[in-house]
Length: 104
Image (cartoon, rainbow, N blue to C red; front, side, top):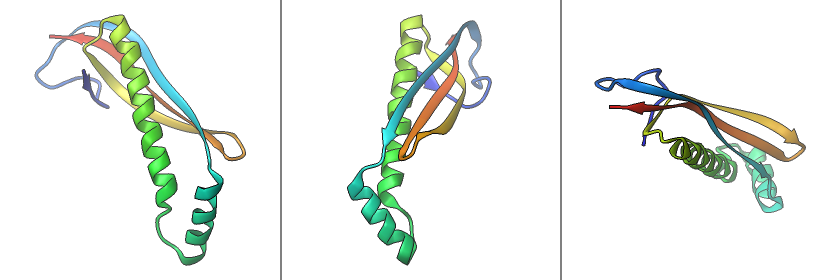
């Protein structure tokens, strides 16, 4: 499966557009991570616990999006975008979406 944020794939021809595909996950913060983040907030630096959590969320969202595309018979997804939203205090959604296509 070829994944790209661009609208086309150089050297490939889109022969069929299958439609919108998406994958999302909602993650809640963990009290242990909150404690470490609070300490980092005092001394400064990257909050690696949250960086790891968001990275895992992106991968899970991509995997779910790819699964939808495969069910449609796609071999590529173009125009991929990501968005996040706060769902409630301490929880956030990460959504990956794009257009499933067949390329040759």
